[in-house]
Amino acid sequence: MSLKDPLSGLLAGLEGGLAVMVMAGDGIVVEEAAADRTTFDLQVLGVEYATVLREIRRTVEVIRAGALEEVCVTTDRLHAVMRAVNDELFALLVMSRDGNLGQGRHRLRLISFELARELA
Amino acid sequence: MSLKDPLSGLLAGLEGGLAVMVMAGDGIVVEEAAADRTTFDLQVLGVEYATVLREIRRTVEVIRAGALEEVCVTTDRLHAVMRAVNDELFALLVMSRDGNLGQGRHRLRLISFELARELA
Image 1 (tube, chains in turn brown, yellow):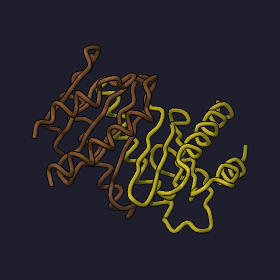
Image 2: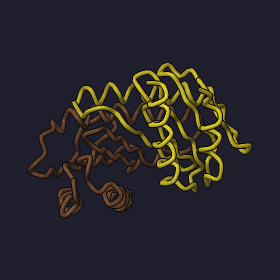
Image 3: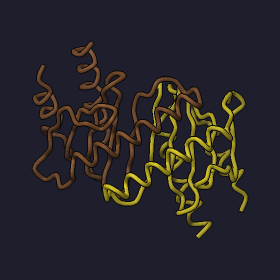
């Protein structure tokens, strides 16, 4: 299964969508799609957010909060939305601060379910 | 300024609201309010999420994503929403998974601005 098309499809027409990646837990980018206006180093971004996600996974285990589903990080410049695909992979969507976050979260959720099904 | 009343006010009538805390960056809880049905150890939860927030702050610096505003973590049992109040304090809202997250995020944003103003 090619991941490129669904990832490009997610970004298409998504207001403020900058990049979307499927990554392994260690930060290695399995596949990615980026809008032309992306000015971030996607590899660095992937590695850094993978570290965040590992820390959060550890935390939700400690406090027995259940299985991790989604993490959103908003700064004054960006939204980053991460979703677990399965035990090994996660999807990361990067959007500009004024992008349509609700739409982005919705699309990322759909694609994560689709990937989980395909990879099962 | 007493923080207890605004925190209790935030929880009042918030569907699925379990607990809200104002914490220092090292996880020490400055003030808290909890719904009766809360079954979590708020101190542990505070320390753990403070660790997550430190990690995320470090990450957004590395990737130059701007100043951290909000972090949402959703598991199959809980939503946790964190907002920076100022350089030292942050606010943490814990909600049940089926709670009204939009309402919770909105209320936490208002109270964080209010606290930042009061403490400036």
